Image (cartoon, rainbow, N blue to C red):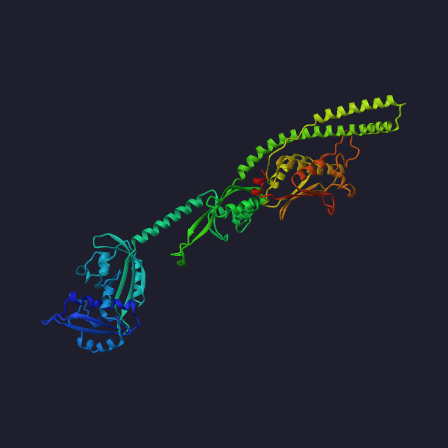
Length: 593
């Protein structure tokens, strides 16, 4: 009596073992009902050798409804029972159960892709029961939306005895489309010829949808970031660039730095000082920290507003699956505010011109009054000395003269007191972080008309990024203006053919250095210490009152900012002033205020 197909269907599971245990001799054991009148159990054994996927040993037929022959060569299998027991291999029923319960849809076909076997997972994925799909072609699952080229590649691969893996769009029994992740492997007979194909596939529709959603969101984020008018860059803790946008890439060519982010971080660390350590790693980070960059090609001075926020991302490596490790990243945004700052600078310069004109007028009155007081003080000192001599000699004969001198002295003191009350005070300004590059740039713009009128060439060599110092903008502006005015006047007096003023800024450890040089006649070595004394001047044959208080004021302002000033003794033609100011961090400045 022939075997029933539903009873022997489990025997076909053995073919699936070919995908998992190739090139290994495995002995298996199967218990089947004999389906004879005695209804007793017979033990059927078989041995799979180097090619354990020969379905012909099961007598498969591609034309009969049973798809199996009714004979299994039981006697031959029984002869191998002793060998299987001696080797201690797993029972064949375990492999059958494993294949039957595998969560992957498995099917076995003949060489023409007619389905000979399916497992339970195949039914779960496609909706087809075994009786509905056995004997039909695998193409009954195909959907027309899959390109022909995919099927061509599939058959071209497996016909060459190679494994094909890819994705197809299939249809379920009820017509719904799903994306199948499919692997097909050829099964060879003892002669090495293809006898059958085994296929395994999974429904990856939801995984594909999730992946597409992630990709779509990634593209959306990238599009938004690239469309942003602000340069954005993400860096890790080692300052490696992880992500950037198009505006950031433009900065690479404009600023001439391989990685502008490192340039800006270095500038921010210098400018913020100790404050950088307090915001480092904090979610809020910092916002709108202005960085001024000098002398960038033909575009001149540039201004950028920098903001930074730190965020954490879970580590994706296997080691952190249970440890829940995370990495910190810095999102740095760099906004080019050059246009706005130039507009503000133009308005600021107009205001400065008015303020400086008033300050210069006040300073002129102040110096004139101080000079007059100095001129009055000299004869008063002589009168006082004469009175002291007459008193010591007890000269009674010249008592009338002594009384007259006393009256003159008192009147002179009253006059000095009156003049002192008339001397205008220079108003104090707020102390704040000051960028000397910006301040010098403003002074040069304010003097641009003078430079053009006198044929002065200005060689401006600023440090690209200069840390701020703590000081008074107005006083520092007056300091640099005085030095530039002195240089201009010196070259005009000497009639110098080469008319050049060189202004250099630099950083030396904890100091900001400023050098202002000219090509004038210079200051003799014997007078270099005297020029900082009150009312001393190097000008000769100048009519009127010459106060000579310019460099006195310069030195006083430098001292107020804990700085130093000196005349370079080794400078060649002309004169060079070296001024240095200490760098004060933002944290310190806030404490001092």
